[in-house]
Length: 486
Ligand code: ADP
Image (cartoon, helix red, strand yellow):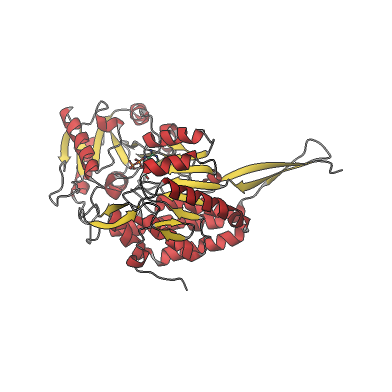
């Protein structure tokens, strides 16, 4: 039997340090608001430098016993954590929608998706094989083993408040590494809730700690600490670059999942229905607030008008509302700043000749709700072509040849996800190989799966999450040379 908790029971607002809920060494707290209503949900503890030090010390103390468990023992505890998350999916989804705004069904999807990473790495850890190497000297034997890197840290964003943590903590903890998580200030509640369930599952105190509070206090403490051997970050390229440089002083291993500027290319030979539904999936999920979101949609001239017509019908049908309402596909944006960014991208595009075909304005519901928007006649000089909008705006660019479409798609310093739609098998290969991205979706807008490697190229990041490769970020390979064997 796995315990079931109400959302209220999982709603924690203190720091999770060394298996205890603590208010923090300073009395300060900060509000977490529901983006759909603007109401304050709760006041969460704000960690001080001293709290971060305490957490780092607790993680160091927890390391020997946790990494000393056998892979099978850790695997069983992680499996229990997975079971608890699945059993409590409704309560966790409620908390997630409350603090993040996404539709409840999408929140459920995120919780289960995140849980899958924990299950996957609970299995994968049993297969962390080493190697024996044919020797170069007859009296020597050569082998490798893979060991946990040590204490680790994660800094995560608000767009996937649960899954971005599970993707990091799952492999780190499976590998034997304690992890200190600093969730985004907008969405700390999901992090605290899954931290609670990790404790319930038997993850040792100090192995998964959740430190909430200002990035300006917590970030530098984590990056400067010589005890922390790896940092896994998901967020903006700007902050990622700063963290990489801060981590250089102690030569930490870094895994960086940074911004994208994902292209969608619709070729003349695409199946139009598949292209439209794939574009909707990729563009409007989470109100366009994902790093793999379609940001630029390149459509070949021969299919352009038909595609725009079909896509505008689909965009106009998207229901906007509070994530707890039924039949809502799009919740609010995270805050007013996000709304202003979307507005500035639209007005810049319009001032340079783009046409708004659907939407274009704040939604009549008010708050931070925004109309799903489609614009045409987008050109490469517009801000929307070079910056991630992170909102529900689909800009259509037109191109003539495959070469031109690829050139436009690749003309960005970013390279996380890229999508294209075609029925031509040779083109599927050609374009997949030439797109400068880490993840390619062909005839689909949904690519995430815990068994597949996720990560970017160019300024979109380093390292991979998920798959058999994701655990490498938390491992060191050790070579052992045994002499005098004969
Ligand atoms: P987003 O645009 O998604 O908010 P950010 O990169 O600003 O992306 O934030 C992602 C995470 O990084 C959040 O948890 C945020 O608090 C944290 N963060 C932001 N600035 C810093 C910093 N200077 N040092 C450490 N963490 C930071």
